[in-house]
Image 1 (cartoon, rainbow, N blue to C red):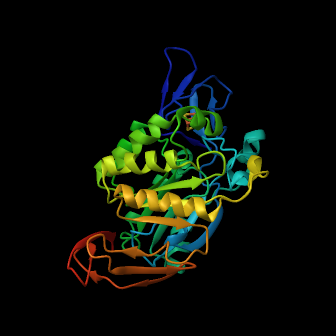
Image 2: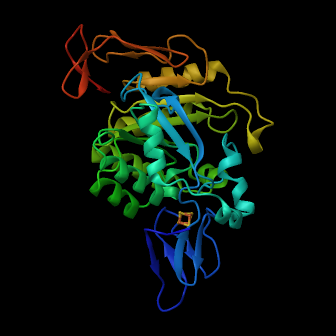
Image 3: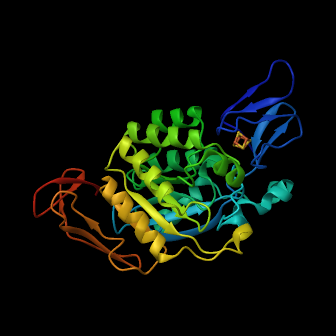
Length: 347
Ligand code: SF4
């Protein structure tokens, strides 16, 4: 257990307010927050997941997915148990949800110190780390310690750090991310574009996720957005259009991924998303004016490639996580070799 970074005592009582995510749970002594991995012990809030690493693996960055950030690089990925959402379609439910029934069992699990993560990253010569599989906000103290440890080592100081997030982190958490320059890129899962749906399926409110998408873009941290298209839940043209319009209102440069749903968890009874729905989603988002729209979790041809938004030159070819780049390198971003335009691909 580690003392939490962001919490306040409520008045003179031993009740505490967790400030890590937008649920802002008020937690009584010897009780847990909504994520069930933060516990109030005698007026102090503790993280039960500090260093309780799960799913350590090396993946292509495209698998996260990040398509416009360091294409073709290898990333060390991991998560910890628990989540602040309860998504009925969660593909990692064994990691995110099952611990909620017995959170005390976490106390007995072994801690992997940040130094060990650093050694693994060095050994396998990865390009960076992805905090993923479950919501990284709920293991923020650990992710932060790993990042700080790596930034202080001459060999790993330039590694990139990526959050794959549901976008429900609090303003206090995001202030730390910004002021300490912890992250290079964030992928936010925009699950639905309807408040009542958001609340009933995830337990969170849409407005906080929309606000955070805007905040991340304004901060200059590289941002990509993903929308898992679920049959009968969010596969309408209206939903595709609303998402595209919202993202364009911030910037047409933000990459958008429409991913195919496969039956999972409490939505095991549903069929996979029809390929036609995904093609329609992409066509709508491109017609609205977004520059980079991808389809994921399929073998459809030509829906994972990146083209120059100005002259349509093929900049990055992708198939089954195999990546071939055709751009020139600018100072920080890729440059189209045909029309010489600098494009939003961080190299
Ligand atoms: S991280 Fe979020 S869900 Fe968990 S205790 Fe804190 S406010 Fe509640």
